[in-house]
Amino acid sequence: MEFYPKVYLYRRIVKAKLFIDDNYANAIELDHIADEAFFSKFHFIRLFKKTYGKTPHQYLTYVRIENSKLFLKKQMPVSEVCYSVGFDSVSSFTGLFKRMVGQTPSAYLQEYIGKQLEIKTIPLKHVPNCFAEMNGWTQKSNFQEV
Amino acid sequence: MITRLNHVSIFVLNQDSAYDFYVNKLGFKVHTDAPMGPGARWLTVNPPEQTDLEIALMAISEGMMFTRESAEAMRKLVAGGTFGFGVFQCNDLLATYEELKAKGVEFTKAPTQEFYGFEALFKDDSGNWFSLGQK
Image (cartoon, rainbow over all chains, first blue to last red; front, top):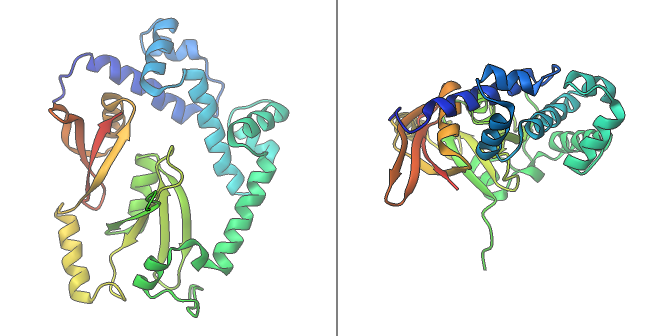
């Protein structure tokens, strides 16, 4: 069933979304994406928001923040993360991150490091007992890879 | 009184491949990825807007849960598309369908208006199938 109404519109909106997913680290001009998708800017923003619940700009910010979490988990310095995901000001990145995630990038990284340490030392804390028992994972298991 | 479901398991043929499918194709987030000893791994993911539901991607391997024979039988059943594991939800089914198709997800049913709702069906990389509905 490839012939639902306005399939071409959906494909253009999806293409624009995937463009943002792939190019979030660059300076993206939304006018340019709208042109590429053959939409007027107003029409593009309206359709994008109807489809994804966010304006293209809000979605771009969301993708940048989500990717910044991945970079932080690789223990990249905050300033480097900021520029790697397409922001050009560390203070505005930090403020935006805190507003969207609920904690600063540094606090997010510390929490992640703490969880990773806990996974290494007490892995069973993260596995419900029914699953652990089913797999024979017990407190006395040696979880170190050989 | 039971109030919520917070963990559910899906049996997969290969956890590395399942990771790629659920994270890179479906866009799910890794919740916990913990080595549990030689050849064992506790891997859970969650849909991006449902962070309190952990979907455990469980390897089918011989051990406490499966004998060699039952593991082999289970792998065949999973690969053969025996198991439907649930219904995922999205805001816009047509857009999600186009996006996932573009990422290589195999749909066994394109978006169709049924008497019970608007749905599509897709398979994961192991053969488990899911319904995808629109909120």
